[in-house]
Length: 154
Image 1: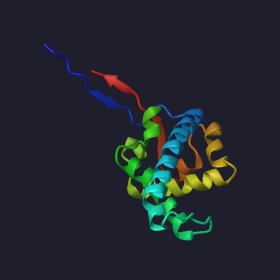
Image 2: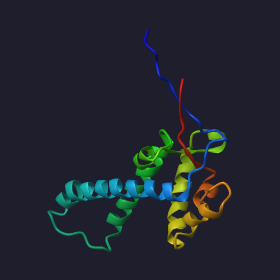
Image 3: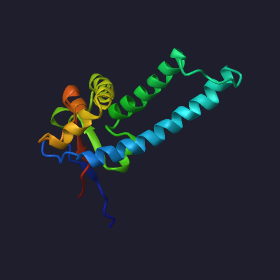
């Protein structure tokens, strides 16, 4: 007789919210991965198009490309499983109301709002320290929340 292990994820309203230090750890992990991706795209796709010439800092097309890649990195992963690679490492999941999966609209809104949270001297992120639900501004704006991924063996 072999026993099968089945994992379920608690993402309901009783799920444990994620504290700010864990959020920041996941963000750091994702930034390392994201900058590696942006470096690879620049090195292998963009520089060959410029014949190896440097790209100027005021090249709006290049800046928009990098922003688009960052947007896709986060929103695609949030919509397909609710986790970026950094979130997986720290056992965090992004959920919508009632623990439902995040919609494309919520993911896009969250991505833009997270940038605004960071540009306000990080106040949007720091808000999670004082919020009873441990939610940041971008959580509230997008009607999403980060919860600890709790595995239950059955």
